[in-house]
Image (cartoon, rainbow, N blue to C red; front, side, top):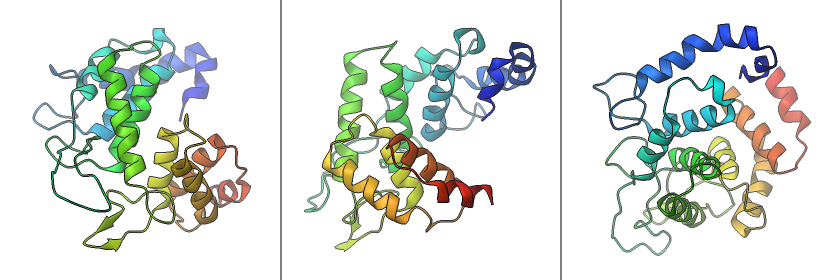
Length: 226
């Protein structure tokens, strides 16, 4: 949020230094970031951290090892469940919020977006494989109207509705596949539902995702400003 201050190196150094130092202190022996050594890593937060650190000039990244966070993300998978489901392939593995749990749309989107950015400078076959499976998972879990719920597209035979923030996150993660039918449907759904969730979180993500998709949404930004 403060990245525009980078244009003034003196102010940026003063403001960013304690926060980047905090992230450095949060890096554990396994490479991932946690607020406390006794807590498990949150993969949504680690995906976001990779995106942040890769967006900064190398001189501003502190001593936090991006490569070690990326390696930690690549080795993590959500639990695979081999149960027959006509609507959903639960064997696909994205990322969970916390270790040893099921894959969810929010952490999968953030980690996939992070790895797509990281492969420009830290390419590897394992990284590419995780991206491919995560994309398959998001395609498989697309809701019937388009877009994404927080987890499944359906449960116990009932279709689940998509939400604005999760749909926006899925679109940001899949922005390099604009012609995929699942992405096209999600953009259309988000454009139609953009004002239905009035939280700052939902409006902000909707504005970002629609902007990236090339859709003007001045009413979203006006609602957000209000």
